[in-house]
Image (cartoon, rainbow, N blue to C red; front, side, top):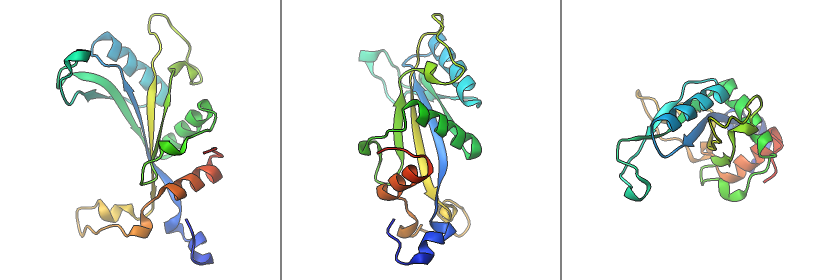
Length: 176
């Protein structure tokens, strides 16, 4: 962010914060493999996962429309910040510029669930990877989501890639 004057730096409405962290684990099939993934995600995040449903049929992969093929958890508040801190340590605090979208949100993957503290390899379970999506926002976002007197969010309240990178470098010491 390029502040126009000194007051923009201290304005609490311009400070970035983590809106939510979404952890997704796609296993490609339902049954025992999906139930193991749900147990792993419940252990890692501390929240109960929701099953992800296939949106279309893909015969090459043996996936039917409407079949559960993965699970996800949405974390907010202190849990999201703690989970992000742990996840960034696993990827050694390095994120590529291509992992950001135009609104400053970013995603990264973790190849093995065994990288998390307290998790160990079990041959009965196997190894599962996961995707982590982080949504950043400024205060005041509620005006665009509320039902009563809903308004368009001003452009200066939107998060862009430069703001997001600066936030990660200062708050989480991430190398981009």
